[in-house]
Length: 517
Image 1 (cartoon, rainbow, N blue to C red):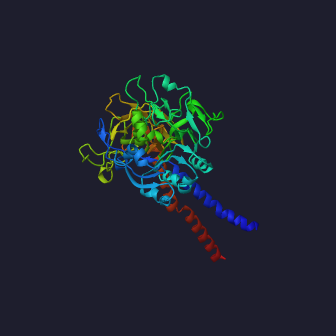
Image 2: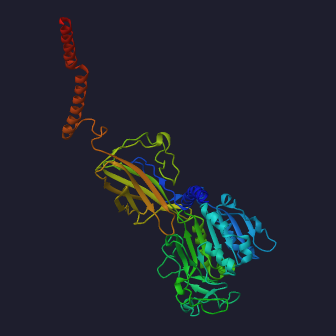
């Protein structure tokens, strides 16, 4: 038995290691190798029309258990089907007698995103919609939108837990008994909206790519909300709360009692987002009512916020890409493999899709220790279907060889139309292969992981010193003298017959002695 168990362990261990490597690779952001362009290539100024198809619209799967979702959420569905280039390719209704068996694992390969709009997340919904189905989209680097009004049953709680979302209790809801927003001049309208549960909150995130801040210092977005609250779990670097509760907000259970052990105030999230290392995005709202036509007409900010959230969720905003990476020695002296045949429009990045294959690829330029080199790269951000220059002062680069030799911020031109970041620095005095790394990770933006391998040669290399400098004469004299001595030693061994002559003489003398005898 022990031998069988040891044999099984030998088989199971490699399988587990292989599975771990595959899993890590699935959720990891792959690094992009930079391609250089000639130093005299002109950068594009101003904004560029977006021509990247995957950022022009998404083909979506829509899942809902709302009985009249096309009536109650008509404007929101129009945003998903027909507006901004999005298209609903598959609509699944979760209800008794519905096509609940239509959710297939292959959907993640066919469609670009998943939209789930629920009234109550209960056991019946979980039987048709599993958390593994949602996670398949995220593993395939697709995007997910999920909204619900309340959670009912243990299965619903477990469903959200598998998605790293925590909701406090079944049937819980939030309410602002002190009406902070109302006292500031915002009144909740009467009619079909439940005034006892509905509240206004101005705790909306600012200065990110998700929500566009209104112009003017005194203007502030205010969201009309009705539903429950949640807390996002998992790594902090992946999570970004979009809308939180007011400072006087409380969480109630289904019996109307305050849940004292739960978080309160602004610690309760109403709308949250998360982005994995593979750039898959998730938006979760603990209310589906805020995206209904009734809430849109009551408060126009609800509709604007929905448009901004969907734009970010399906990667029509918050996307950063690079263009024209340049690296050259001081003075701009570098060899070119070919003339620029494109009239200055060829791109070296992934933004315009320039072709650097064949004769358009820049020739390998040697770099030597202690050289002064200039680095520049253009960074753009996607806004309203245009690529506009990214303006940030926290873009860093690293020069790495086993360990980080240099880390510094890239400089940015003050011109508003310029997207170029640049830096000049001296290479280390040690030869070897270095890696220039630009890693950009900010909440609300995609992860940009760029690298370039930079071979650094010794200053004694023949390519740089075809004519020997006077300072290097002792070194070369030693080299050539060593070679001369080596060949001289070989010649002496080959043609020196002094040992053979002595032996022949000894043999002759011994022969004469034998004859005399």
